[in-house]
Image (cartoon, rainbow, N blue to C red):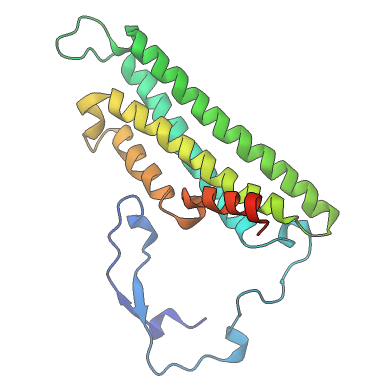
Length: 209
């Protein structure tokens, strides 16, 4: 940790869905860092209690899925409102009167609910293990990783469904669906919420590691 004024910020961060984080690169040259300002990864915990008793993945991964599920819920709610009023070209009825849209909304609702249920069930089991204080079993850690990826994947699928069904309305930047589409596709590009987590679970199931 060093004072911000000791760094030269490199303005290289221009990412859809994450512009507000300001995650630029920076350069440091000839700056002394006292030992007290250095915290090695995996060092001693600063706080006691069950919340801090597991690997870092237990903290980073599930919140990403929660963000994705929240985006998907907003996208579905936005689409439902749109479907009740939008009459597509060469049509005499609103989107909400089409049977294909009924099925689509049902699928999106189920995808969001399934991802959320898996995530919450896994977090409940994780919390119970942390309360016991004897460490988190490897198989449970694997489930935490995949529950995050699965919930995120279902959120992305739900957003994709309604984004496409909304037609040209969804690509206008002032429409919330455009932002939901952009943001949810950023979440699953984070390593902790990526589809590669399924491979890790499969490896653990088949190889035990």
